[in-house]
Length: 309
Image: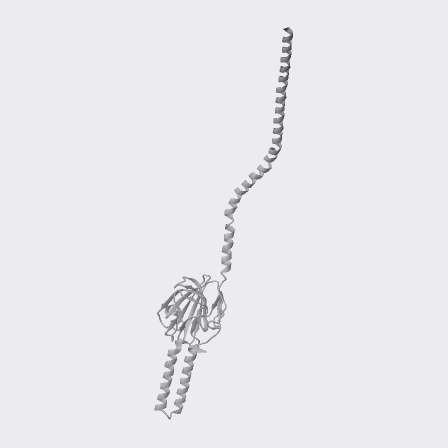
């Protein structure tokens, strides 16, 4: 158990006050034993209150992408659907935790991510459970966007006794889940605004612990991404379907050519060659036959001419 750094000055002032009070009683009323015991008891109680209020316990924090850790110790006082009008400007599930003066007032990030919005508001100091304290009291508004694009908004709200809100983050910072983001002194409230569809794991009146109690589970964004990818997969084949049609026609043309003309070429060509050869033989024979008779007739004529002479 350690004392939070925000309590150093308060603790020093308390110790100084107790020392002066007891010194005055001892100096001016040395015989007032009953009064001395009352002052001793009061001094001890005051010191314990300050110590427990500014205590900062150490513990292991279990982190998960889809869980919402409680931002502070206290009691759940609000779970309702409402309209967030400052930054998100849409419907959200509001979950509020009230911190009494006896609770640890360390505030922790409910999720990990990037601080996408931060603003400090000056305001009133109504009691923390007042309905208008969320919009009229002194407060800070912080929004963190996680790696899945989910934004969770939360507010530190000052109470009737809390007159100082401390924060350790600024817009653009990268933060871890369960890491300290601020501190509120002497009674206050933290509102958390979750997306619709978030599974709430606590009920009104439950006592919760900052950084240890899981308030809710975010809806898993993976099915949405898978659905988008499936839609793309269904649409993508449409262009190839149009391109397949000419491909089929091109394939059919060579197939017909390879089946129909091939036999004609293989069968018809030899017949043409044989016919051409036959025709050439006929021509040659016809050419030879008339030539021989002409030659014989010439010899006979020659012999007759010789005899006549």
